[in-house]
Image (tube, rainbow, N blue to C red; front, top):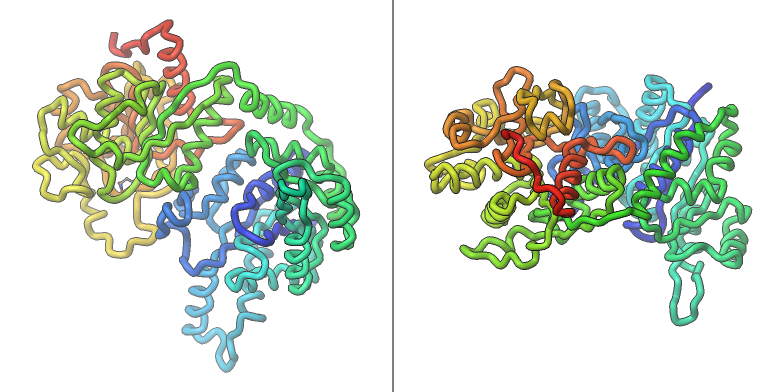
Length: 545
Ligand code: GLN
């Protein structure tokens, strides 16, 4: 069977959750046994998301194959429970750099190179190449940005042309505001959005309406009139307790059935076991039996998207452990003074210190790590959170007063975290960190790290330049810090643990591999430890005893 396509386009504004709609479509088709893959178009001229500031653009997501991609890939993977690859991310930057280098090679000699047909052809060529090499039954393409933007206009034009050659279903995500004063769902903005899409030559097959409540029949009828669609093809995407409910809500409205019909996909048997497993996991998020307060310490906490994967990994672990996770976002720069006020974190059951770059907020993180260690508060340090766990230990337990990472103090006497020689030679910043899936050997069987993974060889994703400096390994070890995991060649430290209480630091980013159906082991272990401590039945036991 040749590949069929679903194209998801957003109208009116960003932030409606196009990634979640795309992921829900992928999941619904996956339930039915179709082989699916996402593709994401981003109009920005960066080659990839790796050089973007998480403050402005949200989290940079990293795939196994070292690609640094848009955070929507995180949503796709968390829903699909599959590892994706970087070629599925097509950016303006990749397209323009390929076209100008081809031009320099003389591939277009004599021609005027234009957006249409050269760039649009290139987009279609890339899509068809993915279809040919991976042979998915359905490629679900998310067009980043909003219809009417200059940035994504050439992608939209390419999709119009794609439909001339292949079976394509267009899904338009739009917004229906609910005016409280008149208690009415207003359709005018959606009508205007639709008009823009029609102007671009695309008539949607499905209209998905982001709303605060379910769509009223009268609203559907009005929209049907303006869009030439049957009311059945107009669906709602209302506010939900968790985004993982959306595939189920769209299923209730028949999206999977209608998509299969529209694309004329061969009949397959839906895997009801998978559907009910998903339903159960979602049910445990909506109706948990207990609750825990988890502090997520970071330096970009006012922009929640910066930590999307950490947040979701906690939700996944909470679902696995049937516990509601109340995240307390803690901005580390508020804890920089000599004696910070910890009253906002004293009822916390666990602490996660996230990854990050640059000096701001670092001393606050170190103070908070000390606070957690001294109170035996279950702790998980992610990348930077592991590096600072080592720095805190060096300073406060090993007497290395000005210990630091050379990223923050190049003059420190004790550079417990430092650049490797090959990183010192790096000149180009894009794509040159230690990236992607890296194997790690867990060397201590009696450790929380081993309890989490239950095996010796594991693999997690990475994104960092600095490493633990082995010059200090002996000194920290002699004062109790445990080195529980190393790279396969044993040259680089991957996991550390506190000798007392539950405290794991990892140089990797396990949150990037966490999915609802396979939560990150370290997060599950953290939630378990927090539950124990919370219930007060058991102090988190000392692994060495
Ligand atoms: N800034 C640190 C490094 O580059 C940590 C990076 C991270 O937390 N992802 O090594």
